[in-house]
Every structure is written in C-alpha cells, then in structure tokens.
Amino acid sequence: MSSRHRVFLASVALAAVAVPSFAITNDWVADNEHPFVGLVVFYDAQGEFSHRCSGSLINATKLLTAGHCTAPNSGAVTARVYFQQDAGAHFDPVTEIDPVTGYPETCAPGTLGYTCATSHELHDFGFVALTIPETHDAGLVILDQPIYLAEYGELAPAGTLDALAQARGTKNTVFTVSGYGLTLSVQEHSALANVSFRSRLMARATLVNLRSALNDGFNLQTQGNGSGRGGTCSGDSGGPVFLGDFRSNQIVGITSFGLNALCRGTDFAYRTDRAAVIDWIENPE
Image 1 (tube, rainbow, N blue to C red):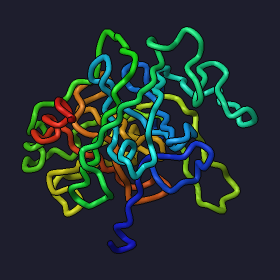
Image 2: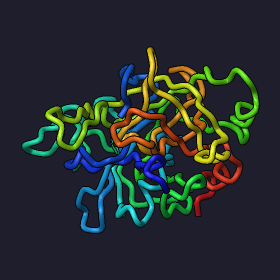
Image 3: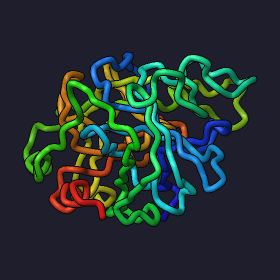
C-alpha cells in the first residue's frame, strides 16, 4: 500500500497516547444522548492493560466494537467496560487510576452491573489485518453482568446505506460519531501534548463516499472537518457511527481506521448494515 494510502487503526494504548491510530475532534460536544456507548479497556493473558477502545451496547450483554480491538492478535483476553460519560476524566497519571470510576483497573464500589461490567468472552468477525476494503473489522464483547438501560443502540437494516452510494445530493447526509478517544493528536516531536478527556464525546460528520477503492461497499467514509463537524481519533475505535443527528440511535458503522495519524483527514467506519455482518452479530459463534 502506498504511503498516500497509509492507514491507521483507531485503538489506543493508555500510557502511549502518541500511538498512531484514531477521540472525537474539532466541533464536539459531551455525549449524554447515548448512555449505551462505553469505554472498553482490554487486558492481556497476564491481566495487564493492553489497549482501550469504544463500543455500543445493542442489548443488556452484547457490546459491539471493532474487530481489531477484540481479535486474538490484539493481545486482548478479557475486558472491562465503563458506561459513565466521564469514565476516565479524573485519571491520575501518578496513580494511573481514576479515583471516581476505577478506570482502567477496577469497577468503583457499587457500579458493577450498573455502570460498569467485566467480560471474559470476546469475538471478532474474522479480523486479521487491515485488508482494504474488506477488513472484517467488527467485534463483540459479551458482558459478565447485564447492564439494563432504557435504550440501546439499534442496528440499521441491511442495505440502509446502499441508496446513498448511487443517489446525487447525498454529500450533506449527516452522521453522528461517538467515542472516548483523543481530542487532539500532535506530531511525535511536537512541543504540544496530545489531549484526551477520556470522556464520551460526539460530533456530526458528513458523507464522503461508499464506493471508492477504500470502501467498495464494505466501509463508510465520512468527513469531520468544517464548521459544526467533528471526526474520530485514537481510542474511538469500535465506537458507533449513527445515521442522523445527535438523537439518533441507529448504528450503520463501527469506527475503524483513518489515513492520517494526526486525525485530521477523513474517517472510515466498517459498515454494519450488511446482511453478513448482521447475521454474525446475532450469532457470533
């Protein structure tokens, strides 16, 4: 793959926030609309922190995320999910823990099964690498403790986005992205620091296309630059892409990869409005 099309996964290692990957950037707002979107922390076979992603509960125990977050080659064996809007906002770099939520090591007292859950069951849709355009970048985290909410993310029916691939005048179609990733990613030797609120943020994005060589019906390409718009960055991997404005719960994609490590380009999501993906989500065995 040429350097012009170099791609970066959107997961992030906690201590190494300069990892070239994919938060919600630019014109974002706090996401209090989607309580089913959680911050997912993954651990390796020794129980040590591996990486973090975002994800969406589609029922009380099934959380949808990216395949590159859950696949065996990610190193992930178990996970913990925090559903608080400010899940890691009080993270103390000295103790390396958020004293309010317990992120990333524990669920705070009284939160297990309410706003925090563990997982010992991870699935992926056959993800091996970023084999563009069909990346198989879908994953599932099955919670040990059900989280009961008034609403969950809803999978869009198969083919929901197909009409946008052909119709004219669809470039202003609005999508909403949500996640817990970086809000500013800087050059490796920059005097500035990366910015991560570790809070659930959301932003509007618009359609670029669905049919380029990087998409080809498998991915959704959106643009988060411009007034009133925002995009994704490191740690947003696995977060939902909703069709519509901030109040929408209809998921059409999973934040997957980007072309720019500084999170200033267009964003790509793995489409979930495909029959094969929907069937796998319903029956991941």
